[in-house]
Image (cartoon, rainbow, N blue to C red; front, side):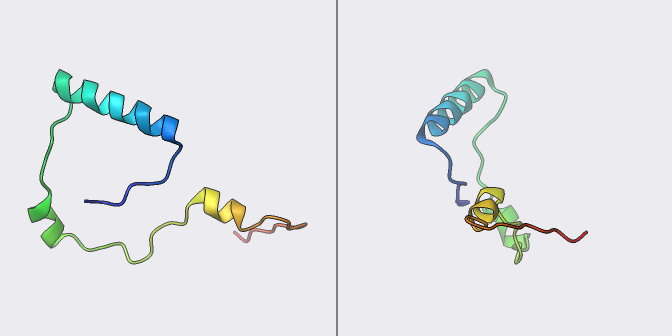
Length: 67
């Protein structure tokens, strides 16, 4: 199973409720991605999380980006 992104507990409840509603309505269905996982390459360099990036700037007086 894929690691879930961290989020507030209140958001977890909302997500779970919406997933259950969509399952019942037939919008989504449960699946097993084992076969797909065997042929999919892992992302060696995942994108950084914005909250972690901003948190690492804590106390900084200057922030510069290069484009």
